[in-house]
Length: 127
Image 1: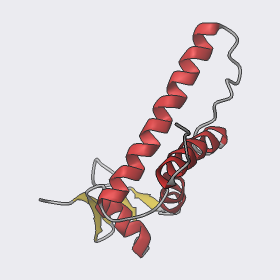
Image 2: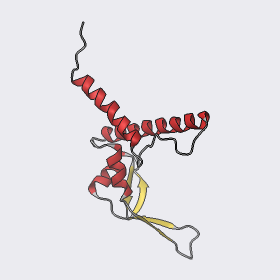
Image 3: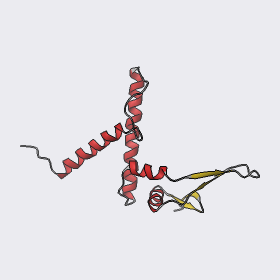
């Protein structure tokens, strides 16, 4: 019985190769153990990289559940551009962090994770 590469096998292969490419991306997960020489530190570094890859996949699954077809890398790029400002009122003990109005894509990502920006303040969406 000969093995053939169907669409599902090709998709699985693509996902594995994409995860490998992400492992080389310095902005997401860098698998290169910089300044680690002992076996235990190298193993610990690789464990943290694998956990980071799993976390990125969880981000993608959360986005997919919300109907957003986007890579974790793209979502992180978009959210990196959502700026905030720390405002300190001398009369109050706590500073207030104000967030700029998110773009439509940023708002969708925030909603997928259960948050919204109301009057420039990030708030958990009430169920």
